[in-house]
Amino acid sequence: MSETRPLVSVLLSVYNGEKYIKEAIESILMQTYTNFEFVIINDGSTDSTLEIIKKFHDPRIKIHTHANIGLARSLNIAAKRSKGEFLARQDADDISIPNRLEKQVNLFLKKPEVVLVGADTIMIDRMGKPLGKTSVPLTKKNALDRIFALTSPYVHGSLMFRRSAFESIGGYSERFITSQDFDLIIRMSLLANEFSAVPEILYKLRIHSKSITSKKWMLQIKNGMKCAKYINSHYSNAISLKSLLLFILKKSIIGCSSVIFPELVYWYKNRKSVV
Image 1 (cartoon, helix red, strand yellow):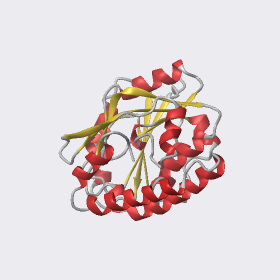
Image 2 (tube, helix red, strand yellow):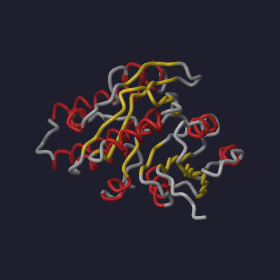
Image 3 (cartoon, helix red, strand yellow):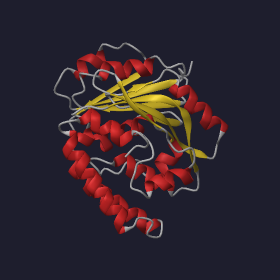
Image 4 (tube, helix red, strand yellow):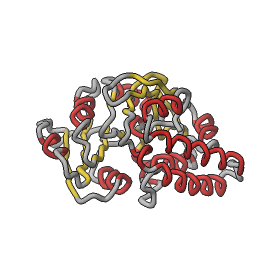
């Protein structure tokens, strides 16, 4: 009997994620939608991450281990080794609500013009306590409004892509150590297709002092400026100098403050939108 091809491939890359990886994996294995494979990249972890992953004995899990090469390159490898028509992201310290995949797949099947599906997200602290929620745009037009304000319209880990669209733009740009999701969304917005989202909380984003935004905010400013240049080259100078300066100021304040008060800062920053 031939193997049934999964409709969804969940992609997770982890580096030294021993504290939260078990909960992240469990949140996918407990999904109400079951026709998926779970491609996990152990990106050179030096802690007990790999040992924790190996304790799961689910045939849908496909584990790959390599030296530390970064998130963008690891996710591209995961995508190439996957088989699903739809690619879903999951971050190693976050949690997917049990019906997340089901809701997003159903939206894709109802709307063939859609290439990207997001979902509302709730922020949680280190212990899982709620900090605030985001409401994401339901159309590409509304997503572009946020992009032109140099604001990522979706939480990266909550996204599901149509594989054909992901491959048509070449996947993640490996030039970006951070902001690879924002760059990907920008390039995907240039396709003649629609964006959408499930207007329900389907994902929990964990905020803590070791979050990538907390650690690499100066690099995010540099990459944000690269993204702004790219946006203006394709959308007729949609980003003004004033917007760029406000972005730099906001990132600087948030980056400095998040070292001391990560949960408080991220609650304030994300109370209305994802930045």
